Each structure stands twice: as structure tokens, then as C-alpha cells.
Length: 500
Ligand SMILES: Cc1ncc(COP(=O)(O)O)c(C=O)c1O
Image 1 (cartoon, rainbow, N blue to C red):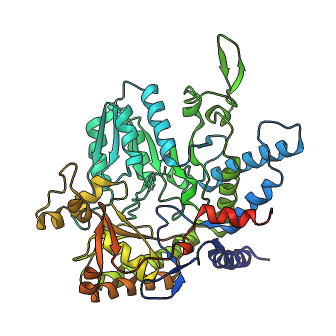
Image 2: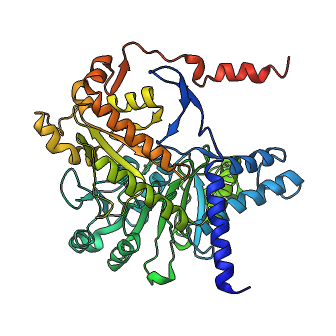
Image 3: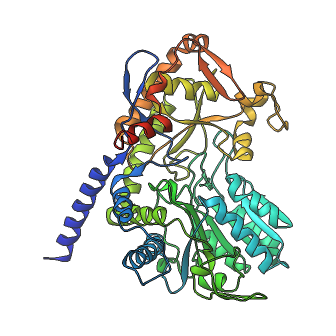
């Protein structure tokens, strides 16, 4: 068989796997009641918050439970299997992000990326106290901003490209100027791979080159990038512009319940004292001293790990490796272009962040309907169309405020006013639709149609909802049947029915 033929067959297999996997997600079609009567399967467009569970990955975790045991022992069968599977999960992570195992180590931490940033910020600050500046951007999630503020003397926020409402995306020249200005005072740059508000992607290897030019490290927050675009931490095509540290949450890449992940250069980890101490990370303990293990990642993973979650994540990553992240990106680009074009064409809708033709994006689209508060749009999309989106400032308050400034000024609202009243909170935010591998063209078109419908029904919708709390809205007449929503007690009763 010629190489070209084999490549064609493999591309066909991959696209078939992609198609089949799309339909495998647990809970994708869960049915909820509609305010207009009846019910329908939901359309889950909240993947930037967390993703649905990939069925084959869940299946691997279930199979593992039949062999469940803790790691760190070779002497009973189940523990041996658990240890090997846990190691397999680490290897899948390294493969997924293109990080050779002899140079990089992956370790699991906490329940999301937040734990990883806190750990890296504390460790890097202790390692190089003479370099007391950290550079972040204005579009960071709080989790990749506040830990650096806590541990570093100075945090500098890079301004973004363009102007509101199209504000977003890193201008590499501006980053270069800031790097030159602070020079060897910079310990590291901690930058998002993709914004969780506007999906704007950042050129991570160019940033690595700039960071290394002054001896700084580059830490990438890949939480919003990891499920949407290929990542290669050590890319031979990029020369020495490798990424020093990359952090992401397993729950954002189709493995709910899995841990956060840090992938870092071994040489960096080896120089650092373990951040947490306890079982599993020591070689020996005496009453007056202890000897931390030199083995990575053990040294970084004190305590009994989240083995089931890690294995679920390893399995999800393996499936994505087989599909190919390039294929996933291509599919998503089509959806992004479609939704951007269609939503831009609706009079009365504000879209935020740079257009995908200006700055490449992930499938994360922030918008508002003019005359509606963000909470009202999210509530009505849920109640009338079963479309699940998120609203508010998405833990990226400085970025959202910056984009909304002209709109808020027009309403005579000071976007920077601290401790705003509920009335202001209701105006200061956006609605966000975000895609996953399971998002289809039909989902995207349903969103567009629903937004157009809401614009057309503006007066009716405004009259039938009332504000609730600081950013919520409640339908005055429609009360969903609680039996349709998840309830752990009912679920447990049903499960116990099998054990009378
Ligand atoms: C860009 C970004 N960084 C960090 C985080 C924090 O992730 P976690 O809450 O899983 O720790 C999020 C979560 O939404 C995010 O979108």
C-alpha cells in the first residue's frame, strides 16, 4: 500500500471516528421542559465552563472499577493494574501535548487548572525571588491572574489588540515592548492559550521566544485551548521556542471528575521543593527528618491520587489523539465562521472580541442582545429553546469590563465601580455560547434562530420575565417541573430499588 493511500485511509477512519464519537457523549440529549409547552432534548453550548463525558472514556473508567485499588504497589494484581493505568494516563497527557517524556513531566493536581497555577506561582516565586515581575494579559481568567498577584511583587497586565467591542487577542509587538521594558526582572509570563470570553487564540511559540530572550519562563493556561486546537509543547518546527509549563483542567476536555494537569520541564521541577508533603512523595521518614522522593511525578503528587479521574482523562486524550486535533480544529472553524456570520447579520446583536478573520478563535462566542440583560438572554434561551449557555463575566472581570465600557458608559454606568449594586451587575456581563467536539451545525443554527426569535419577541420577553438576584431572571408564569431536573435523592432511591 502506498504511503499516500495509507494516509488517505487513515484520514477517512479518523473522520468516521470523529463522527461516531460526537454522538457518544453522555447527557447530550437529556430532555427538559419548555416554557412554550412540551419538552425537547437540550443543546449544550456551555463547554467553556465544562464539557460532557465522552462515553468510551467513561467506559474505561467503569472497567477499571472492577479492578479498583490504589497505586504504589506491584504486589497484588489490582494495585499493579492501577499503577500501570495511572502511569498510562500521564503518558497520554505528554503525548497529547507533544512533550517528550525525557524532558517533560506531567502531574495531576487538585480538581482543575486553578490548583496548578497556585502551585506554579508559589514555586517560581520561591525559586527566583530576584526576578519579581510576572507578565499576564488583560484577558486572563482569574485563576491565571490572582495566584501570580499573591506570590509576586508585581504583576503587569498586557493590553490587547483593537477596541471595544472587538477588543482582544495579543499583539506580539506590544508583548515584545513589555518584555524589553522589564527585561531580567521578569520571572515568567503566564498567558492564556485561548480566552474563555472571546476564544481569541495566542501564538504560544512566538511568546516562548520572547520570554526566553530575557531568561523568563513561559507558562501557558491551556484550559480553553486544549480541547480546540493542537498543542505541541516542544515543536521541532519552532526551534527552541518550547513551552516551559502548560496547565489545563481535565474536565474541560471530556473527562468530568478528572484532575487538573501541569506539564513542566523536568529540570524546573527537579530544582523545586515539593509543594505538598504527605504519603507517596517521600522515600523515607524519621521522627526528625524526611527524604522527599527524587522520582517525578511522584514527588509532585502527595496523597492518594484521583486514579479513576486520571484514567478517564487518559482515555479521552487517547481518543482525541486517534481522531487528530487538526481534524477537530477544522470542524470547529467551520462552525465558528458560520455562527459569526449569522449572528453578525442579526440587527440588534452585539458580538464581542475580534472577528475570526482577524484573530483565530476557538468556538467560544460572547454576545448580547440589545435591550436585554445578559441574564435575561441566558434564561430565555434555556426556557424557550433548551439552549444552555452561560452569562456574566466568566471569572475574567477586567477583560469583560474593558470590552463593555462604551456600552456601559452610554447607560451612564461606571464599569469600574467597585461593589456594584445588583442593577449594575445585571448590565455588566455577556452571554456566552461555547462549543465542544459534540456541537453540530444544527446546534449552531438553532442558537442563531433562537437569538433572532428573541430579538423579534423583545417586548413579550421583557414583560414575562422579572429580575432575580444580581444577574438572574425568572419567568413570571413558567415553573419547570422539578422532576425533570437531576436530584441526587431520587437518583439514589432508584438505585436502592435494586437492593430491597
Ligand atoms: C481560561 C481558563 N483558565 C483557568 C480556568 C480555571 O479552571 P478550573 O476552574 O477548572 O480550575 C478556567 C475555567 O473556566 C478557564 O476558562
